[in-house]
Image (cartoon, rainbow, N blue to C red; front, side):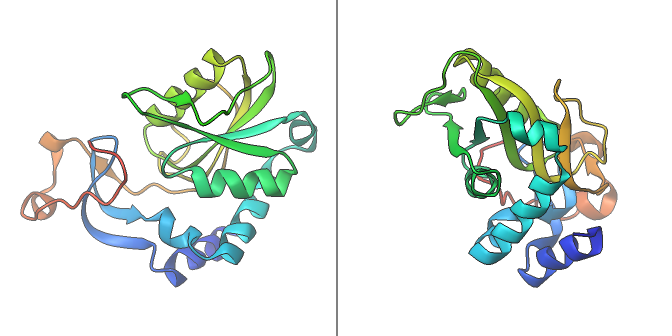
Length: 193
């Protein structure tokens, strides 16, 4: 899929929002990608996951034993990536503030894992998910995401394969441009800032 085709999937599902948004990272933006909306259509989710899987080098795809994503936002794309790669998909969640495998999910010591997110902005959630996977015995061989909001600047400590990289500016609370500062921020994500 080309970048225009990917963004048209977001527009068609009304998942590319404009306004004043407080991101999970604590930063502010005039744009928000509501991946839950783009992924609510199973056929669209499948197309996007297949396109994302195709960005991974063939030798890497062959190494992956499991796909793990952080809950809540990564669950659907993680599941679809598992389907696209022909491996099981699990998720980590934060019952007490830090990510962990639950619900009977487990890894074999040294099992090779692809960590999959919906959107990466600062990489904080991704790095926390990677740490949880490693603590459970897995080896994260790469990370993938539908959207890299850092436009290639994020470092996750493993090879990173986004479907699309965008450079919507984000701002710290004390750096807001006047137009954003004059409006109330909306918190559309699943995690409290």
